[in-house]
Length: 441
Ligand SMILES: Nc1ncnc2c1ncn2[C@@H]1O[C@H](COP(=O)(O)OP(=O)(O)OP(=O)(O)O)[C@@H](O)[C@H]1O
Ligand SMILES: [Mg+2]
Image (cartoon, rainbow, N blue to C red; front, top):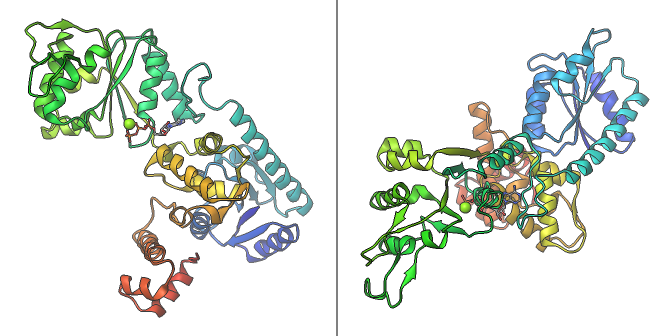
């Protein structure tokens, strides 16, 4: 297990490091909060021992920031002797335990071992109660984090109504999955769930796709065909990527939603349809309305109930649960992640959210032969990802430099001459920077 020790006193750091290394732990040290965070971003520590009072960032502030980066991290706060009510304060700061100076090394070891065990047990417990009880449903939704519980509870409350629901969220956050859940929990569940991908239907076919057509309505309409509205009759119509709809088609959609009636292309008569509409988008529709790209009346018609799906980086505690779920999905042999590899995943930003995680797991288990996935089995863009979303200009430039170098190196299979050439720097400078950023293949 990798442990990080943070203390402004060198003697204290050296003493703890020496002791813990003898006990078989891998230990790194930092003299203040800023250096600790920079190490924490780069190395998958499972535990932090931090001093409370330090110049610059306090132990509390440091722990809060680390929790944000990796909520799985365990921590012990080490405080000066005789600080009153420290236990309470430490709990508030989110530390798992605390100790007073001078540190009794055997007690410290015991606490570390207890926390290691507790981490393993709580992982198992979490897995048992992961997500909503979807076992009677043909879909599985994983998520035990606070934001996901809210999403699931909201879906449960939206389901019984006929109101139009709008699901917003970044790409890959599970919008379609939640739309299906709403349908399955609704009284319409025994009828169809019909999807319309608004971005994928060619403009000239849109009306015929949605409303159907009569035989001979246009060249190529050889037979009569029912549209998606009719197919969804009695059930749910899922309008995916609704923000991609061109303005003239928005008008046609609005009319159908308002009147609850559709006319097949080439038909004289209209017919009544009973559909519940759930829409999804990763665009900021309100902004689009403001900019004239989306009709305001349609926006209000679709946005009766609304739900925001949080990106994966705002619910990092779900990552281990999702990993286990996808491992089960993709492999029959038992495979698991070692704690350090898992820490790296939990700290990663996942711009592609759950879908990115899913594809990543699939790729990893295809390539990894051992039953345990370790740090080196992870793709480099994740291993060397800098979790610092915030930071000073210098820190961000540093992170960017690291990323650019890494990308160039991977592109040229770590042939330094070529990477240096691409980056427009000398090989000597590249070697220096590789060392500085501790990059390795
Ligand atoms: N909470 C979850 N539990 C299990 N699997 C999930 C979860 N969320 C998403 N997934 C899986 O991740 C993938 C992407 O989900 P989905 O297609 O619903 O995302 P989306 O928000 O519609 O993405 P896009 O905006 O790109 O269309 C799917 O394979 C889905 O099954
Ligand atoms: Mg989708």
